[in-house]
Image 1 (cartoon, rainbow, N blue to C red):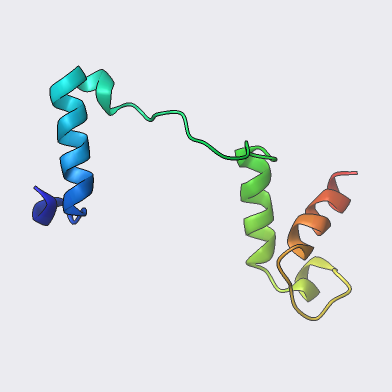
Image 2: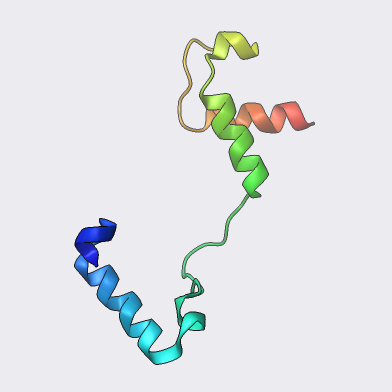
Length: 79
């Protein structure tokens, strides 16, 4: 199965075990640990779309994007 799906063998084993134990409900996403998302999926998509454009096209006063700048620009546009 791992070879056919291109997944790691451990992943297939984990999923098979969950399915054997709980059936289809066992394959649902489980709650994840870590910090909750700080933005909505729509906001994340807008920032990614902005980052794919050159800053000059958007009117941003910079020559290239750094990591936090697309998010900062998106926040500025929303206000």
